[in-house]
Image 1 (cartoon, rainbow, N blue to C red):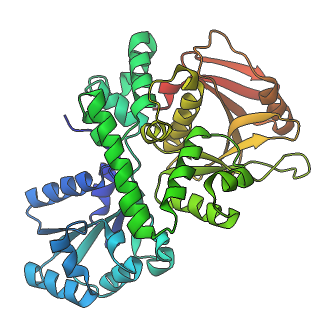
Image 2: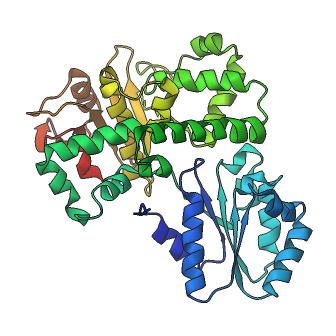
Amino acid sequence: MEIARTILKDLQAHLSAPEITLLIGPRQAGKTTLLRELRTQLEKEGELCFFFNLDIDSEAIFFQSQQKFVAHIQAISGGQKSYIFIDEVQRIADAGLFLKGLYDRQMPYKFIVTGSGSLELKERIAESLVGRKQNFFLPTVSVQEWVQYATEYRFGDRISAVIHTDELLEERLLNTYMTYGGYPRVITSPTIPLKNNILQEIYQGYIERDIGQLLQLEKSSAFVVLLQLLANRSGQLVNYSDLSKLTGLSVATLKNYLWYSEKTFVTESVTPFFRNKEKEVTKAPQYYFWDLGLRNYLRGIFEDISDQGNRFQIFAFRLLEDHFRNSVASLHYWRTQNQAEVDFVINLGHRVLPVEIKSAKMKKPELSRSFQSFLSKYNPPEAWIINRHLRADILSGETKVRFIPWYDLI
């Protein structure tokens, strides 16, 4: 059974647009699979399609120059309208300029392109392709996609109600995702040893190809240590001085490596929310991993009861990222010099939404002192407490506080 990816319909809709369809995301997230699905669909409709994978030397050779590639696709297509799929485009030197040149020739070709790292790693593609591309981001399998796959698509939009009434199902779905994450090959592997081996393979491929070759880092071993430290400190304030000492990197290089980890879609920084710079502390970000399986692999621990609270917070981070992806919302955290803190503050532009994460199966509505402090200070119209089971609404001052089980956000 294949994993249904929700982004597929957006990609299908963009096939008729003249702009380059650019699908970016981490290694092994399922980009190539989606390209092949699109190709199969188009070929069934009688369209002419050509597929190039730049990880394959015999296909990469056509990209030695733009002129050589254009001559080749004109030859194989006979100049007819065609769909040209290019997988792992970040392997091309000056990829943005290469794609810009293809688009500006106004040939009868639609380009659908993938990249395992943001092309900003090698150049300023945003400037090269302004008005010429549409970005689509594919992270590893989302919680929503996982839940539907794991329940064999039997319940559709009733899935939240089903989980709410089945405690054992909720436990299994949550713990499996919090342990092994969302890489498609990991999800579909039938045994735990296979899941572990695939995570190791994904990690090694990332270090050797995306970090070692693509980025040409001078100290890849220091980058590995940095990732391991971040895995143990997910959701904690970054202490640059401490990380610098432990990795042997200068603070400037350390910050550069953290940028690399984001641009290759392994981590995401969450910056502080503040309006009063006098009282609301530091500008240091927190870092979260996009995928819990990779994070747990880096820690060397898959089964760890003492880590459940941290895992649920990372799990909630991913839920919120997916829930608000197609909006202007941005995720932040809040902390004051008096140590009052709120896990996440969603900036929705016209208002803010504070979100507290509770890994327990709450029985009744309760608010922490820190959360009440934020509500009193900012008086938001709504606030969320994401937890394991409790559904309830209460008022705190003028704020409607909603207690939301995690599965209500899928």
